[in-house]
Image (tube, rainbow, N blue to C red):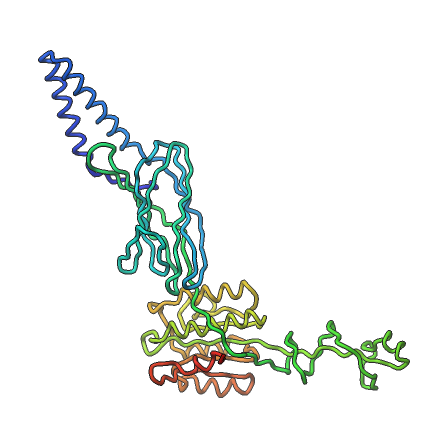
Amino acid sequence: MIWKRDYYGAAQTKWALVVLGFLFVFSLLLMNYVVAGVFAFLGTIASLQFWYFRQVGKRLVMQNEKNRSRLLVHGPSSWTLEFENPGLPIWNGQLRLHFQNAVNPIYPQSNAHGQLNEVLVPFTIGYKEKIVLNIPVQGAKRGISKLKDVELTIPHLFGEGSIVMTYQPIILMDQMVFPNIFPVKELRHPSPLKPGSFEMKHSIFNDVFSPIGTRDYVPSDQFHHIHWKASARLQKLQTKVFTQIANESVMLIVNIAQGYSIISDLEEKIEVIASFIDFYYREGIPYSIVINVRAFGQSPYLFIPTGDGQKQRQKSMELLSILSKNDLTMPFNRMLSHLEIHEEFPMSVIIFTHDEKEAAPYIAKWKQKTKVLVYGDDRKGGEIQWKKDLIPTR
């Protein structure tokens, strides 16, 4: 059953039908046909109302297709609900929605109840009619807001009482709010020891598909790099000059555990990671993310392999959006040990941790083969100093 139906006031309607039937029969016995006609008319209305409320809404269909909207804090979005009614019309109904407070409704008839927001929407739909309701919302904080339940109240046409219909299946709509992003300073750490796509002087690798000019030929130049047209024009051999390229890739390692609990500055740290990701996305730098939250799969922790582009950014932002203080973490040193054995390190590694001593043995080894940066939790006056250092001065 898609809709769970609860009747309020049906018992009074039944008793009213019984009383009207008794009065109708009593009026016939007294041969007072005018009064009997009045009671018959009232009984007919009550019977039609009873039948209507037993049938109304039984064929109402709500489209429940999987849909996820993504937005930033203070960004606009909306819940879009589509209904189709091949059955009896519904008049003066009221739709009640509950969803988590990662988004707030921009609607006059709304209330907040703890971690949930409630919205009341007028609802009327005719026979064989389709309607679409849009309830505007705004991103309030990082996280995910799921539509918990949809409840439709249909009042009695005459008298008191109503029918409350509750949608039973799990609703597949949600709103994902990405963390705040702030501009950061230049965060590039290319290495000339491996070929890549980053232009860098003094690299030992050339991009043979990107010639940028010519120079005089020297005996050590390769024969197939000679620019024959330029040589004929200048009457001496010319060698192509190529763009020098270097490899640039980053691994972000994040420690969100402090003892047996989650760090107190989780939101601030997530904003910093999101800002790094946004910078790497805009610059086209491949990156991976490692977080010491337990997960299922090949890695016992949250791990997004190296990649770039829009899909990588979306996966990373979604991962940061669902992180919670209720997540189960694993010891940071155990994660670093597993990472060292099973993963290949990129050109640079950036570690975010409040306890540098725990990671010190691994940092010392990793610095011998890659560039390692560590951002600790250096608090002075309640502020994270390294976060302030990352924001460019204006």
